[in-house]
Image 1: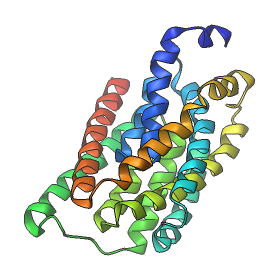
Image 2 (image 1 turned 45 degrees about the vertical axis):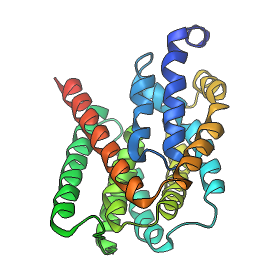
Image 3 (image 1 turned 90 degrees about the horizontal axis):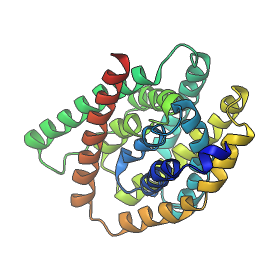
Image 4 (image 1 turned 180 degrees about the vertical axis):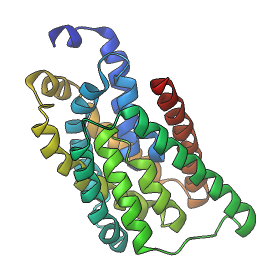
Length: 256
């Protein structure tokens, strides 16, 4: 592990990864935080990258929940969280069977369809069109988000497939996402520990990168507080589209 900490390429990949994830955790950039594991995986195995990143995510979650304290949609959380718990359980049970490449391919395809559907609705109904909350859809997408979050820390796109069309106030959406993923990542600690991913080497790397977590998360929240909805939502959908294309590319490349 000392070799990894002395490798400048480790920092070249890990520092931007943690900053981008932190900005996303603060609410800025939507699902762009998915790049954390792929960036860090340039210098280490993807499973190790996910294990190193998880404690950092948990610290970011604490900062994010504190930053958006009291600003959230209770109904969305109540509808989505049971599914997330089920999804994490499914991810744990199938950890040895499901590859990260397959998960990225599936999530990328779903996200692309989601963005295309949004563009169609904007063209047909206008920019202010908002979907109605749906308990069944929330449970389904909560399950998908929990599963993909466990396997590859890619829970953002499935969460947003359900949450974005409802068009909550950007601050409320950010606060709701903060609580959802804080609970999800805290639950993931148990199976990750059971799978032996939290050894001394990985935890040491997490501790080295940890100081970047609160700074980048607060910076993301600062940016969101200053964005109007008419800017926030197109920007977020655009980042989801970029994320989806990258997920498709990585998934196809890994399966070939």
